[in-house]
Image 1 (cartoon, helix red, strand yellow):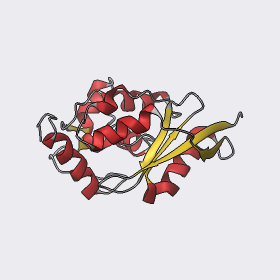
Image 2: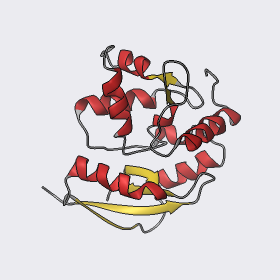
Image 3: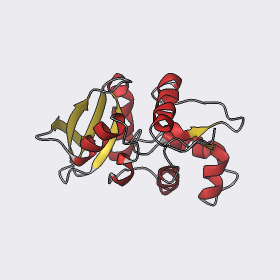
Image 4: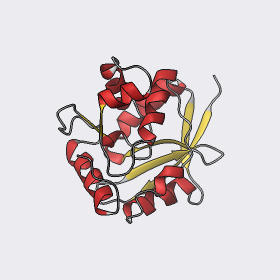
Length: 177
């Protein structure tokens, strides 16, 4: 397996430090909260193999990092055009693509994502794919909720999920919840 070189940037945010990993072309490969760094590294191992990637400090700021800063500064659609490349199965990537179509401040149930990808009975599999998302916030897994409308599990914690949705709504996102 070839070795994927990743470049790390850290960004302060109101909900904790964010780790941004881009590749040599400065395309976003992973994003997570610094206190979930071990989780992000497990996901990278799953996607690229345990010895398939390395991390070094980035030189200069990537477009992905600038978009994340803009997002937290109130431009909640700044993340919409961030290019990403991920590992994962075809099913997982379909879920992540469907999540990117959910507008800022909006929420959808697992069943809606399952229907959107043509697998209406695959709600649990959608939940698993959502949990394996290596690009938090940009692939907005925080916008998925339970069928009852309740905020359900989020890799960064429910309080962060609530904060992200409220932030998006406060800055022009739509309100569906």
